[in-house]
Amino acid sequence: MAVIIIGVLILLGLAALFVVGSARRRASTGSLSRETVHADASEPLVGVGATVSETTDQAAEGGEDPRARADASRRAIESGSSVPVPAGKRGVTRYEPIDEEELGITRRQFFNRGILTGMMLAVGGFGAAALGFLWPGASSAGGFGSKINIGAVADIQTAIAKQMPYYNATAKVYINPYPKADVKKAAKIYSPLILAGMQMGYVALYQRCVHLGCRVPWCQTSQWFECPCHGSKYNRVGEKRGGPAPRGLDRFPFSISGGSMVVDTGVIILGPPIGTDTTGQAAEGALCV
Image (cartoon, rainbow, N blue to C red; front, side):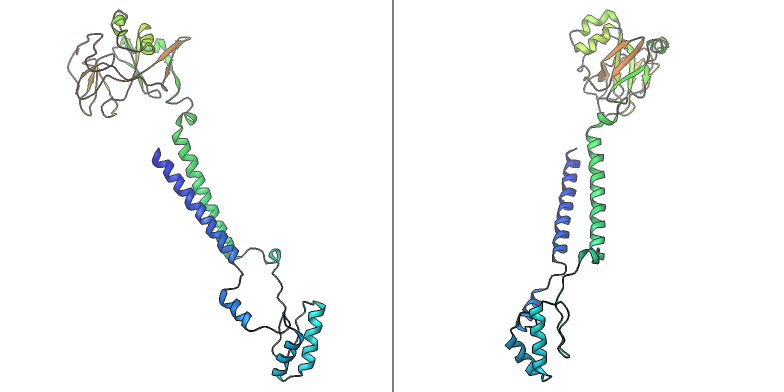
């Protein structure tokens, strides 16, 4: 989860850098370069910030009716007209700022905004998916991680009568009977949540092997749970009997209401330690693993 959070932060940082870079490029679009400004300052133009005498001197150098050109320049300056001032072959036009509404959007701006929008959508989608992964309980209402009605107690009793645990794939749980005569011994080891289920005559065992996480199947001949991955073995109530498992099968608390059993898969209680044997059940036949 930490890797996902770091990845989201990196993507957001890259997006912020892209936004800042795009803003700077847009701010510099249309501005004059340093060389251009220097060249304009070294060669003043006729009719733009020039005095009448300077205009007259420049016109005299051209040799084409200098007095007429000087008068025209003076009138243009005094009137503030934006109409180009004729000066023979060296006519100068007053600069008028471009109307942004008339210009619209440039090609560069269009592509920059399109790329930025795409990046923000991608980062937003990835962030939403990461948040959904970090909080699975919010998107898995009714699925594993919540309270699940696994069926009627009568159906559970039917499966147990065939010497098989009742299995529910949604809750990933096995339901097996627990002898009420052994509840006193269990009270010294198990938590009150699990002990309450034992007093009702059942245990709800998580299907996951506590060694490396394989799904543990039921062996009909031995009446044990036997993991095919590495040979861990558990008795009928999920207490470890052999193999590399570090403890017994993990389990869930449950309740019975209206003739149905509801298993709380949001609460996983660790299995009993190695050596726990409250029922004394040995293998009742050939082992499957």
